[in-house]
Length: 248
Image (cartoon, rainbow, N blue to C red; front, side, top):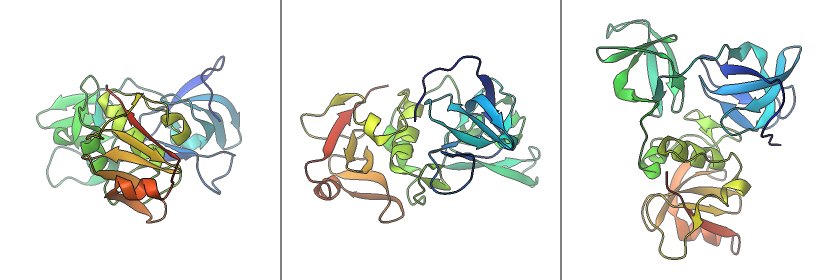
């Protein structure tokens, strides 16, 4: 279910760790998405330990545990590696407090080689400012190579096919929807040879081309993010494949 707007939604944000978005107020079955630290979530209703609403980035509707939501802050930086450690201070031997996934949005100020954020000290070498953009979705996707497959996942701890595409395109300035069915309509159709950065969706599989032959995708059957010839992927879903080209 997707919702584009609701009246009087309460803006909240994901706290210091990723949290799954569920189709019902229960952490059972398959999640519908995953909120990353700092991402917005608009609450429409509270029910015991659950908040029902929609994700600010892509309007995905679902339930998240109320305890995982915090007051939203204007982000200054975004994690641009698969994962990045958060330390207690800038000392190289400082205690590691947490690990932030790619796409996590942080608020803080720069001191030397670190971002002093509300969650701790994060090396700037793993971050980009929010007003900066990536230019190569294939390079972004490759950072998650071998990450496990997880329905609803959007991080190095687990990602699904549409989540990988979304994570690859978003840093490059493309606001991609959450579902594969909707991702079939992004950009324009590729009528000639495929090139690096093109999106291919075949059946319930989809990913990003790393050259004219090879596709990186989160594969349910292999259980991880992998690279395969696009011809092999499309052959598994004969007659149900689309090729799209997008520009940020």
